[in-house]
Image (cartoon, rainbow, N blue to C red; front, side, top):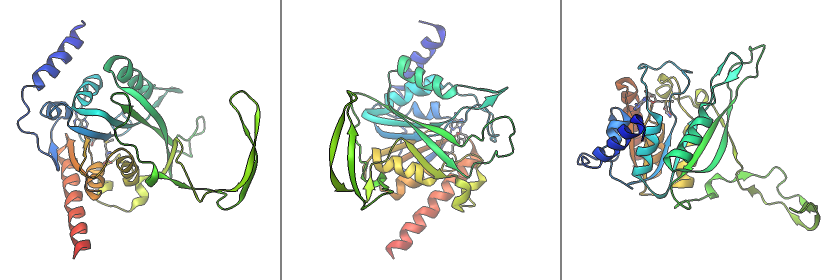
Length: 289
Ligand SMILES: C[S@@+](CC[C@H](N)C(=O)[O-])C[C@H]1O[C@@H](n2cnc3c(N)ncnc32)[C@H](O)[C@@H]1O
């Protein structure tokens, strides 16, 4: 065993003995690896988060994180069939991509023991960069969907259905078979909705008009977190975001009656997330009155 592996194994072993201060429905100020050490085994249904990657944004910290140790801790706290959704991309330096996303995927699967359920593309609408003359304007990130165990414990595609472009029109012709042959299709009307594919498009958070959220430099859209929560969890389930930033995952989990745990290392961002949750509580109360 390498020294680094031995340290990680020791961290996981030690963390199993000190889990008395685990609380839900809150954003904890602290380092995610330290806080996760207090989270019991197999207690989380879904994790949604976006890590800082490749120095693309300047945060108020400059922290280093052991991403392999994070993979181990998240696997430990996740229930069988649970999902960890990682929203991540690759920086570009000297005309080459960093491959950070791909390194994460290979490490989490080959070493840590997660399985890659799907790799979706998050199409970012309204992304700047049109002025670059020698490279493309990068308008995507990835949503790596890691699965613990044999199959997802939750999978509800219904809320993620998209409108069919040709709804109501009569569809006929031929389908291509896997052996290359053709099969004639009986004419039928195209449904108004169809199953979501693996490219998920959202306008960037800048267009959401949430000034409080925009005080954080690198947020993902509310709807991205919402879609993941609706698909991979049910009311009452526990949703975790170990790097919750402005609180997006926690707010969406709370909105949809999930239990939540957010962790954030920066007191400034922790303050933003906590305020957003208070606003969401007021909004919900207002709806009940
Ligand atoms: C990309 S942002 C997440 C933004 C979030 N998804 C949102 O919509 O607001 C990454 C966050 O990770 C936090 N962070 C970095 N290292 C951390 C650590 N070791 N533990 C907890 N949070 C950390 C940063 O402060 C930053 O707020």
